[in-house]
Image (cartoon, rainbow over all chains, first blue to last red; front, side):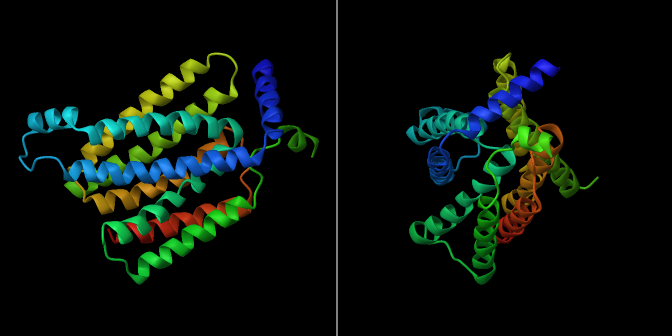
Length: 149
Length: 110
């Protein structure tokens, strides 16, 4: 058990030295992929035949370039997310990726011509304020500092 | 049990599974030994979550399910604090709560 804790601490200390710019770039990539994933997924679902038969839908999915692109984006998201988790706390990184709600909202309004209202705009302001609060905290827990206190 | 209740219950289970799956993925990058086991467990749990979420959509509207699943933020933050011993400061909690309310407002209208 002590050995495991030492490994965790050593890993965390090595994380501390890494550049936050690289973390920011990976978080940005996670948000961009998340946004693209939601939009492409929605387009892919809308392109499915309105037949209702599950078997025909499965066949359409397997032959749809959009769905193959969705799977590719999911794989990219997964590996990028592991890189993010290597450099940051889960409780830091996960809420920040909620910015994809903001980007999806604006892209849906701009390109899919979906309606926006005051309540949604208020929600966007809340999300942005929340991300600002989280960005003001340390991106990784410092185990040694915490033990010293 | 009404269909809505079953749907809500399934989505809440999904938020818990999301938290556990993410904790396993984080464990995989923290531990030098048996990291592949943590990744495998994480992927299995997140895949199970996708199946259950798809089932939940049979009982609930997408907008409602999406709004409830913003509880992910709370479950992930709690599990990070309790299972990963991450330092979740008051400022971080304020941020999480603001995002939770904001996402709820954005997706509840969809």
